[in-house]
Length: 84
Image (cartoon, rainbow, N blue to C red; front, top):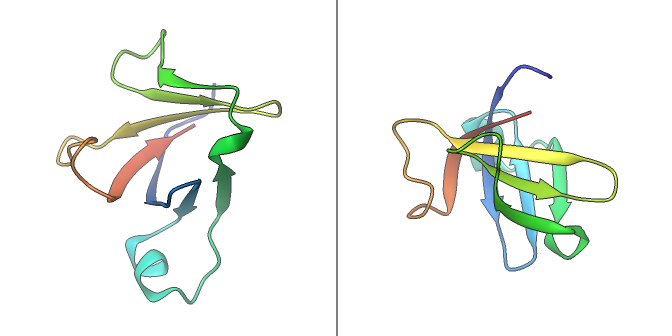
């Protein structure tokens, strides 16, 4: 298992973009580190082995995302999250 890394996310109606820092996200000067097309997800939901995380399962990879303690997952569009 990999270590958790702090990332910043932007969610649109069909895509989740993630960035290395809030500055990179806000400035728009850096491309995102990754792009997750929600239509490509085979499953999105509560992670069974990580009670406080959400999992996004694609054909190529499984993403686990968990809001940091100072952020509420369900109330923010731009969030500080960790993933592995």
